[in-house]
Length: 329
Image (tube, rainbow, N blue to C red):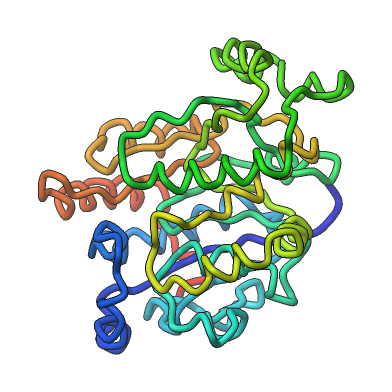
């Protein structure tokens, strides 16, 4: 992979008084209560280790695009030449602002002129956790992806968005049977146990759903442009939602589109790992042992012990990354 690869990180400081005051003006627009949960906007004290991990494990990254409402962490070195601060007002059309909907923020990323064609999108709870190369994310100029078909099992409200994504794919890709030349992407040993599911999916005429790993995605900017060209009304409607709605689609649509178009290369299912924050011992082991390239530490607070868990994870991060990065003051 010889082309430049950028890294996009979305961040919000849910304690910013100005941001909170403005958000309250629009909270009457909330139709889905989970979309306005305070946990979704809560900053972690461990965010500085996100940058330390990037600097240690992903030196090949071209630039980091830091997407923000306008605030930045007080310790962030905004003069670092590899860091580009991008405010929502810099690229999202004015009629969609202000927005508190991550789908709007992510679906409009193609509007950032300086952003490279090849980029990786991470949230602030997704960390590099082992040495990586560009080929871990892109190969032969194509994004690496899983291409795993899995029926959607409705357990939570977020599954509505996954279903909407799948409906859109079935609209544009009528037949899921792949040309023989692409079979190696969908029927290979990198899929592990999911190979069986992909084989059985051959017998269905439509797409049942996808296995989505919440560990970041490799994207092509041109795919965003293409889908906006194909579905302008849908994307304009979603972009008008200040808060998440059950009728939204997400940036995973771009990933699915690449998969259905054959514009991807197979990714190993062992590439990354998703954890809930209460899985402290497993998270500590993943950080110390460098078993996964990317880990996600989901900020759930079901038992009210977020601060306790966050502090324990902080300790292992500090042990692993004791030195400041060039992204810190």
